[in-house]
Each structure stands twice: as C-alpha cells, then as structure tokens.
Amino acid sequence: MLKSHLLHPEILAALGRAGHGSKILIADGNYPASTTLGPNARLVHLNLAPGKMSGTEVLAALVTAVPVEQAIVMDALKSGPYAAKDDPEIWSEFRKILTGSGVSELVKIDRVAFYEASRQPDVALVIQTGEQRIYGNLLLTIGVVR
Image (tube, rainbow, N blue to C red; front, side, top):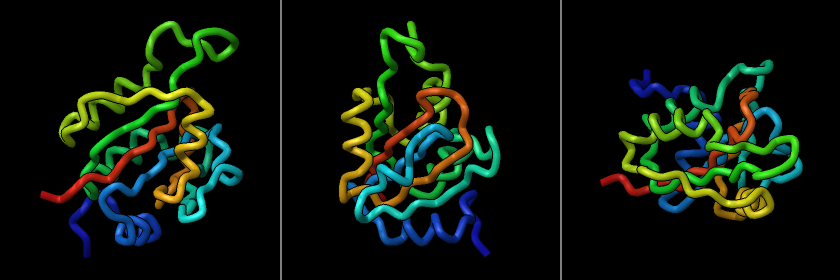
C-alpha cells in the first residue's frame, strides 16, 4: 500500500527512473503528445473525456511525489483567435499548487520553443490530460530531495 496521493503505476515507474533535472510534461487535451514525444519519454494517457482528468488534478498529485525545481508554460499569444490579454486563468491554479514546492514563478516560453523543449531527451514522462482550458500545458523540472 502506498501513502502518496499518486498511485498510478505507469507514472510511478517513469518517475522512479527519472532523476534530478529530468522533466515531466503535463499536456492539455489539445497538445499533440504523440507527434512531439521525445526519445526517452513515456506517454501516459489520462484523457478519458474532455475535462477528465484535468491538468491541475495531475499537478496536485505529482507535487506529492517529486520535488519541483522549475515550471515552464507555453506563453499565450498576444494576437489572433487564441490571444490572451492577461495570463490564462489556469496559470493562477498552477501557481497555487506549486507554492508549497518552492517554485514561485512560471517561466514563459513561446509555442515553438515549448514544443522543442518538450521533445528533448531529458523529458522522462508526458501525461496527456483531458484539460480543456487553453495554455494548460506545464513542463516541470524535477528537483532534488533534500
């Protein structure tokens, strides 16, 4: 029996193989996870239906299992149909969940750079969620257990 909030066997196995500096991508329901998968990443589908499982639910479980050193988001477009005047609302939820982990800021990078970072060899795990809110992708860097 595990006492952690995280019980998913495939996710636990991937985290067990990862180490300091490895990355975890929490991908929203629109993210092209299959075609942007890095060479060492394990893809776990938790996208049962739209909104099921949300990115914030996955993040809340992950922070109980691994230390987080950095969190990167795909910066919102400033013009066009998916433009955002302010930070996307999901980011405030990410920040709230990450507060206890020592991460105070979300690092913003543009869409192309985010896709490139998400397919690098240091990405150990990609979790495809059913998150429907736009800009609900989060690339976490695993920290050190102190």
